[in-house]
Image 1 (cartoon, rainbow, N blue to C red):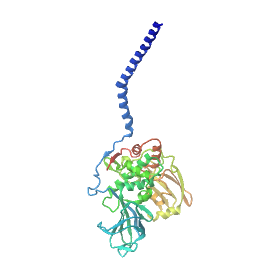
Image 2: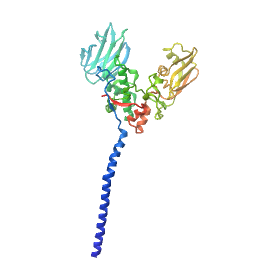
Image 3: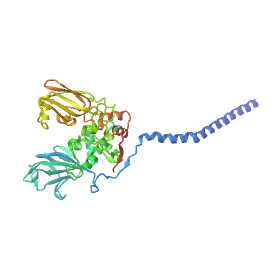
Image 4: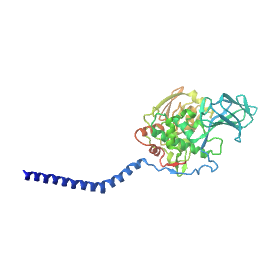
Length: 417
């Protein structure tokens, strides 16, 4: 019995010794080989999500321009507008001197009379006025709230222009909420924010010495109405980041739906060829209802609008998009009429007829007697970021940097501030 017990103990201790040796070797292998491997692989697996964002000085802006404000033309050649400020405000003259102030400005009318700017029953003998809200409640112009300062600049014939001057990030936050649905994927919204900021900064460079940098009609913008908590977060996440090519900021165009392939900026806008805006295969926007479309437009309506730029066009026989680019958007439109054939820029034709009537220039057209039937693809000019494509890419797991790399190839991200 004792011998059996000893034999049992020997077997038991032998197993323990054997297990100890195995565990020791396992630990040795883990420390010497597995851990270094993990430490190497983990950073590599994260590199896909780490994009270098180069810091850059604002060398493209005059050194005298130390502000980060953008000037937007809200209204041109207005005869009158309504204005209101729900909070403390100041009115400044052209020399930035305070000429009036108050606790609140109830809705009133602004107009020009005898060379004076009237705000309600008060008049100011100034060529320009700046209305500044001292709180954060915005300034209301024709029922729309704007966060920035509002400038009133006299023109001839009792007309005036209305310009908002606001910090760039405030403007981007207002635009993004109007350009993309707030419910869309955050990565799509981030890519849109960077595209908007890049476009705006390119305009600041090009028009730095002019009274305004861009027209409100260039982008979807409704002041503070486009701002949400989500859009503010998106702006904070991407603050100061723009795209460049060879160190220069470019006009980062964007549109709703490309229809399968984005377009070359040279063919659409006559701009210098640029790799980030040369056009790429999309393949992500076929869920847009504007991917394929058909519309019927009365000939008389087309002629009426064309006469604003070309009085010779009448009796339309046919409309044809010609010289298509890689995205199949025509660079020109040929209109055959009773007086012969006329050509014009295709995107100009689309905007003249109405971008909500003729969705893109990637179309074929058929004469239907009193009307022209258009069959086409996409919505917008087709250059740069395809918004529906960006949304689908985000849903598929692409991050905002990868979305921008796809639609603006060879571009580089730069942090301006």
